[in-house]
Length: 302
Image (cartoon, rainbow, N blue to C red):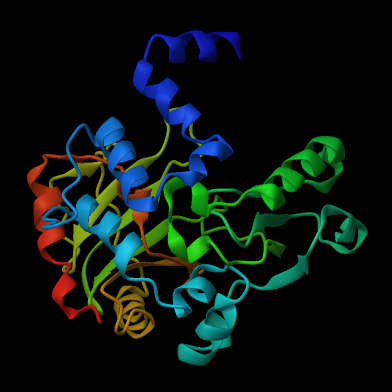
């Protein structure tokens, strides 16, 4: 902890970003807050009047595309109804429970392996592979922290603002090799898939790798925040179905990311994400920030 503090003190930007998380700074209007944060992280001025890049347009969408339905689309519990209605209930990862507090979770009734996650944040997850090894004191603390979080305030992602915090428990899923699933994430621009990326090596010592592919499954020569794996990933068996479903789920939305998993040849829905990386992840080369940005047509927003 001390080392982290000392490291932060050597980088004034990290200190400012940390301080911006204090509740008093919630008084800062969203546009001003996003301009400050964008400058600190991307090191460029945020152009909200004529946004050009992918990252700029995500900030614009946070502010000016605020449809009520986006709230339930990012709610990991409520979105299940939309998925069941639009593509079918069989594409949902089996739900083992939904809870309003840690005390409501009946661990005796759960299988030996399961996954816990909050419905109202991004990136928070607890994967249990062996119930006998659970540290219940630590897990209770973690779950309670999830429930207290108000994710909207972190990056001003409006669609998370009015979600009722809950904890969901899902079946633990693995792929054919018996390891954790790869994420297949499809980027939809005005209801059309333009490219996708695969997340792998998430729990390896070397860290997460992200590989981008065009719609014909050709590798794309750029990175966004995370390094490429250096290998060519096989096209998923259900690739065409993934594209079809992603376009159905993203109809009439200017931009959204649609995630899927594949387990033993079966397709499962992951989640919908409106602001990947919250619009604060740099592209290498930078030209792809402009390329992907050109695919978002803000003039269609009503």
